[in-house]
Amino acid sequence: MHKHTAINGNDLSMNSPFIKALLKGENNEYFPELKGKKGVLYSNTTLAQFIEEEFRHDNFVLGGQSGRSIRSFSSGEQKKALLDYLLHKSPDFIVLDNPFDALDTSSVNQLKRRLLNISRQMPVIQVFKRKADLLPFINHAMRLHMGEVVFSGGVASYLRKYEQNKEEHFCTAIPAPLHQITEEFRVIAKFTDVSVSYNSRPILSKINWTIQAGEFWQLKGPNGSGKTTLLTMINGDNPKAFGQNIELFGRKKGTGESVWEIKKRIGYFTPSMMDLFTRRHTAMQMVISGFHDSIGLYQRPSEGELTVARRWLDLIHLSDYANMPFIELTQVQRRMVLIARAMIKHPPLLILDEPSTGLDDQSAALLSALINKIASESQSAILYVSHRLEPDLQPQFIYQLIPGKNGSLGEKIEH
Image (tube, rainbow, N blue to C red; front, side, top):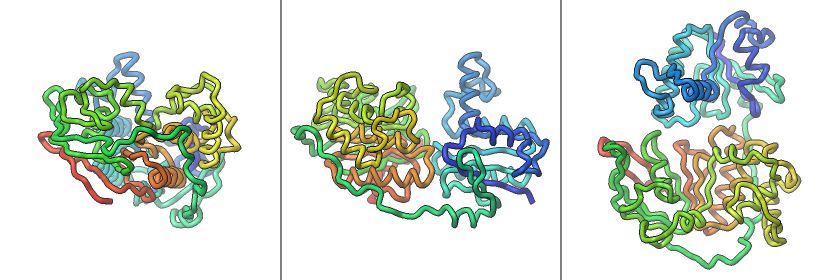
């Protein structure tokens, strides 16, 4: 029977000395059984390298005989192609880096079945962040902190030692908006018999969905079911919305409103936004920039803006980090700052697109607590987009997209 190990660590990089030595069969202290053996890395980091190689040199390694660009594959197809390629190299063992990120339930189940078969042939090392993602055949666990091993033992012992305790995360009230809200909308978004196709391929079929003021929705559905299409028809970026029976903020789509008029009523966050903020703006400046819808702060803030921003930083327990560069904060701290930035004007609609992707259980619970608080104490409607149902999140309703041959149908589920 092979030794299969789960590794957990805060911001453990696949480029760390620990992982590099492991893949070369040189991590003899903790993996003596892999000494001199050859490992492969199944990771989004590896996938990104192939995508970059394809883009720069037209080297279609993962596309294989299909002749397709790997960028045209769905998330599930990309990961399957990568796994096929790595196994074709006949490795002695495989390292899995958060293998289920960005996969829907069906794709996760398919991958789990395949990994179970692989575990019978070779050792599997799973780098994980979520307890629910732990593969059932894992029989050993390790925890790293600052690159050093602080725990090595059985899985049950690991879970007992690091089980998350429930706690009250945010005690102060949501800060009030700087200016009194004068615009009020009963209906934030309304879709009536909306169908969308791309190149004769049906994506959405007869969508009927209404988001009312102050409601908390989760939009879910498998990869490729049309979640992104629906989102872009709300936030003004998708030309497929024109000519459809869509109402946004009390006005029929396509009756003369500008994209800017729509966007100014929407607060938006997705983790990919963090890549846009590369300058050394402070946490305080990042929160204040939400008043100006800018990437960073380029003008002197008013005293009122400073006061409201301080209250948001106090709420998310980052007052002591107000002058720290945003890029030096932890993953979850940066996400909370950007959610505060999105909410600082109390927009009629807050869109959160896969906000917890890549976070560990404790950080995801912290983010969920913040979102629940915003939902309960503000008038903003919330649209939370994810195929993962966070155990701590408390949406009122779920709108689920169900793929079919004529495009995805929509179904409202009371949560």
